[in-house]
Image (cartoon, helix red, strand yellow):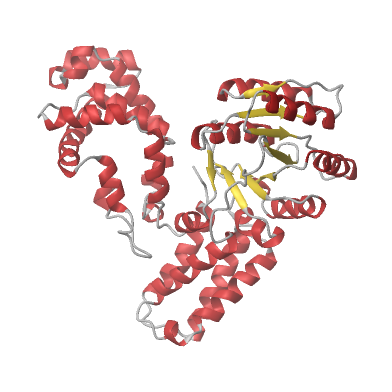
Length: 461
């Protein structure tokens, strides 16, 4: 899950203070912009970026139309949203792969940035989303463990791996990988390179030599978002030495404050093309500035949620369930268990919730209850039921509850709570089937939430 909580909470608090005021005045614009500037700096946004951000909003906010607006809070949200988008790059810049096969992607970055894992994630994304054949290779001759790691990950994501070892020259490895891809008619080669713990002349000389030898179509810089302002400064140092074509921002699901995402484009002039949003191999997303801006301001990201559902939901099972409910048959625990697996595939409860509008308006104590540990507990309870009990929950009486609680390592109270919630879910599934299914329901949510609007609380539970 993408984590911009710190920045999101601060910006929303600032803007909320404006909503009760009838008009924008130069005085309250100044106060609000000062608070936004503090929020940006606390989120580790680089000082020149924060300054440019505020200057742009100030110019627009003092304009006649904005000053005479009857809803200053909404106007300012729109201005902040648009400036976030502009700062991060306006739109998603796709990989440029239109070249004679194989297209070569060179990955650069410091040690510990998640570079090798990102190589495998990107290979998987290209294979799954773009239907490309991919070969990965490691030119990191200083860390044999990195070569072994990439070999393991390549097997995991089911792409070709070109073997290399520490005795070889990185250029020799690169040429060998490219020739192998040509021989096997493979579309794309992704080359992992050596990282260091810091930027040094030797490292830069080697990677410049490698770049000049293979002329990659894409040169991506992988950087850890947890390093905040340093991420942008490191990206600039690499960009000064190499003709970078884009950036991959990793570990955005951690305690990153969001500053790197806002600073990198401004400082380097290079687009963020992907973000790493978790440890799993499918946790890599193309970077869409407008969607990220909406998430930061609590407007949700229904477009990404629908796309994720299209990718990960098992359509045959969904159709089978829809037909079953249409025939008047009840939604049972077997169906519920299938739905839990679909939730895991879409990034878990918080992965889904983070993309829903109004999430930043939900109290923290409520958010803390919306976690995947509860899903694990529920699955353990369902697995402890007999097949007959899963199909006919009404059969579950006190003696069965004791057995299920013992088998799942939970309590009778937890079983009762689940049965009560399950009854509510059965009713909800009947409503959803009448409205044309969950996908139709989600598509219908697109565009329904105005700036500053959120989901009604009763739709979240």
